[in-house]
Length: 150
View 1: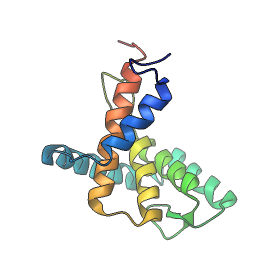
View 2 (view 1 turned 135 degrees about the vertical axis):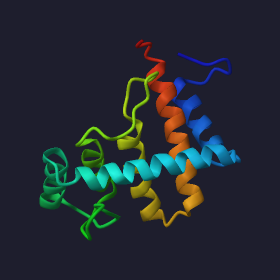
View 3 (view 1 turned 180 degrees about the vertical axis):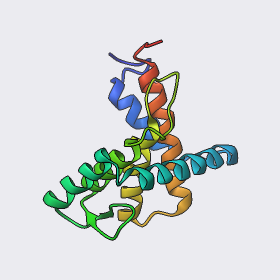
View 4 (view 1 turned 90 degrees about the vertical axis):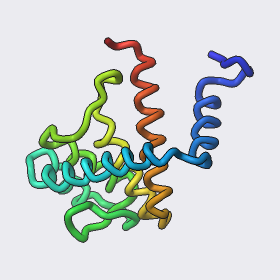
């Protein structure tokens, strides 16, 4: 499929993301992103000792490569993808993570751990982290709602 300018869907999405991450974000959006960040951090810390969270951490600790990002709640470090995965498993472990009714998904457990891992590795500012989280929620909600579930 092509958009009105003849670009493929993935090219259109990549352009949207690259432009959005550089754009000014309204203060209210950054406040909400901060709330989602804090909510997900609490979900990670409460879920890391539950079966799903503990499994994710054990799995990564046994197979880890790299030391790019932290497995939250401790001092163990792993590769970006591995840290994001383990922290995501913990975030969703006790079902206290957020949800998006329109998109029928749990955005925080996927978006926040990935954004945190990259932000830690790239030494991003808090502002950059919050903008990335807000963009993740924007794109995630739009993508899942485009699937047409109701």
